[in-house]
Length: 212
Image (cartoon, rainbow, N blue to C red; front, side, top):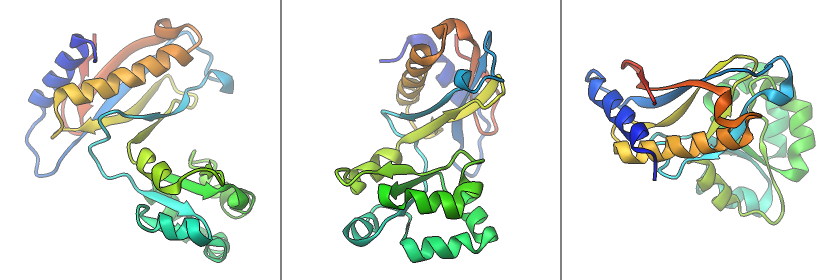
């Protein structure tokens, strides 16, 4: 269960959000300190599964063949086989559109080399290289897990953002998502909580509320 201060901040952010004709995302802004982010090893780059889910649609594309591809079709937004992958490699605009429209990619390990060959220059800079799927992995389970996953990525900037829910979710559930993210950061950052300067939560169009 999340700290009450987190839930209080989320509640304030939800209450102060102006009414819109669409469901707003709830985002977390994290400001880092005392880290040399010019050094890649100090940068945040983590995938975190949110216990209460993202509250939004997550677009997932799978690169697979055979039985794995057939099973993926039931849960993924799109599935590409080897020939279709090669076609993407020949169409830079289509590859870029796919990369921009997709949250996560998953690929059978046997296809990873060709993905690097055909799409590496498109997916790499966007931080969207596929999660490898080993022969023992269940593609359905992997896709469903990633639907509740967000990416924490700072790059070389001290401030970065991540999605933690949607405004129609309970404040308690959003707070639990934030708690999981903060625990991961505390465990992974060199000095733990001391490397976090401040944290804010907000809806897409609403004001920022500091998380104490």
